[in-house]
Image 1 (spheres, rainbow, N blue to C red):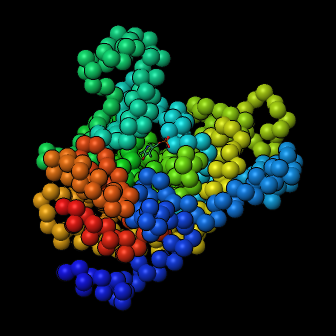
Image 2 (image 1 turned 120 degrees about the horizontal axis):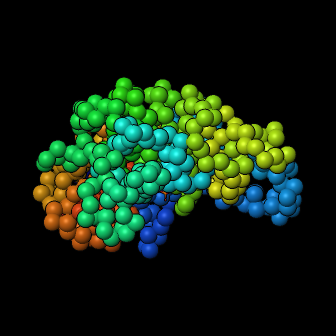
Image 3 (image 1 turned 180 degrees about the horizontal axis):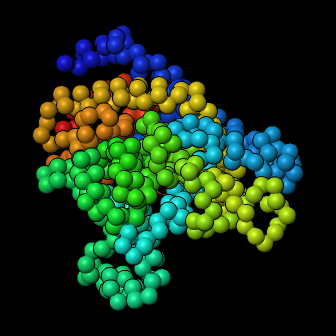
Length: 444
Ligand SMILES: *Cc1c(COP(=O)(O)O)cnc(C)c1O
């Protein structure tokens, strides 16, 4: 298809209804401007989502209430601070397909991953391995590896196994961590096959304590079959958790129905709650009253009726709220409210269908460029990806990325050789996709 007919198609909107039906939401976001005053082509909502229009207003309301009420704001602010995190529980639960009592907004992502692993990674003598994707996001790798080490050092004789040396420089000299099973693509392939993930889980069987993977891999953009992985993990008696940093607000999730044990995610990527925004956690309701599990406790996880009696004994709230530590950051929650109200207006099902279409158009146009300097490593099956496409650049030639950046495209470069682009259905449209591919074609 030549570009003129494509441009016409965008103009008259034929067969693009679902993309068009969600374009309205663009006006509810601030779109950054290029130096020449036009909107940038923003394709990094997978890294930092854009600012909703109401964010400033909601944060300012809290600043005003703090100024005029001081501590009284805990009870008398327009949105009282004491129960403030509850204002986002239900909308957040809707985004990930969870029950409200399975969902809590708190802390930051990696903190929540550690808290969940404290409770749900319980290595025994035989059942002690963790299944993770090779090439998982570094923070997840560090968190998982440090949890394994943490449990090892607590065991008598563990240090003798060697790999536990406290001198991390020596670590590489030892065998790879025997308690980590790292899923890698087949030779010559860039993404994992579900059948291979399941086969690995079955092969290690009762040696696996925990399966802990991303919902969508940050690098390749591959979305995993969380339902099938959870079933496979449970069949061998393991716990199953997911890091949904790149999945929440991107895919339609059914955490409750899929029977996932726990999940964690951040809110600053697809959920548009601002840099360093507050994160969330899911704990399946079957664990709501698992008070026998170890957990790191804090006063905000304590029974709300008796919290302010300041007694010495921890009485956890049943459900995900029982994992809270601290009284929550109100400004961050205010920002999250502004974003989640847009998600409620749009609906995840609607967003997802628009997203499949938008990314489908991007893929189609990229394939039409037919230049062997670039190739897409993200699966082309829409059920195996969210909105992101990862474009591998031949010879790791970063000048291509620099060239598109100079022309107003905000994408990102991930070492060694990938440009990630994520058209987000809330605020990207076909015009962005079209302008991006034009610029890329020119730059090639
Ligand atoms: C973005 C991201 C993180 C970042 O962790 P923070 O604790 O929010 O800094 C961690 N894991 C994954 C998979 C991510 O995509």
